[in-house]
Image 1 (tube, rainbow, N blue to C red):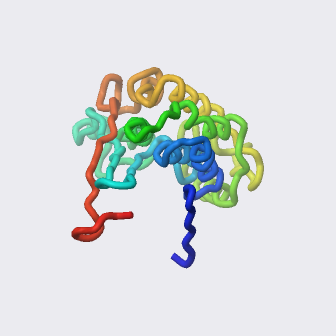
Image 2: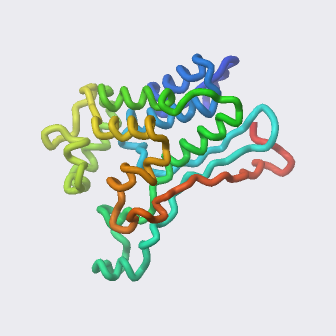
Length: 244
């Protein structure tokens, strides 16, 4: 690193300044670091859509003022019905497709990571409700964000590859083209999804009405779509030392 930044009252780092600001708002309101990062994680899924989403996985390494590191493994398990036989029955020979419904053979773990982090935050004295932590993300999705140069470039580069996938064009394209830089980009369906998670909790993404909507060819309801993040115990970077 060519530059280092230090903060006596707290610091938040994210690939997009709006996500960092979401975290800082939580800290200024008395939230703890875990609560701040839940807010940042939710916002980055909205404001940096070409690099982050709620359809992926999450990995957390958490260090308190004392004691061992805590880890959260929010990587999704494979769906129960995802097997060589089930792919063969669908006419797949050779490689598994990397686009489309039958390519989604694992369950998105990101939201379960938010739930696990929120539970850990409460063990550390956190008191902020999940709805408050998702507040910025919901607002950005509903009201819109300015398109960055990187979002426009990534969308243009992937347009032909992805435009045939259900939901892509109506979500990420404007009149069939990548949105212009600095134009307003709204994601109303994502706003509705986040609002439901805020109201009903992270489990709704896996067990409730949202689970029914986003099930894929291999993950029905019930299934291993009942995803749960797992606690891990990260090793120290060097023998006898602790990451700080």
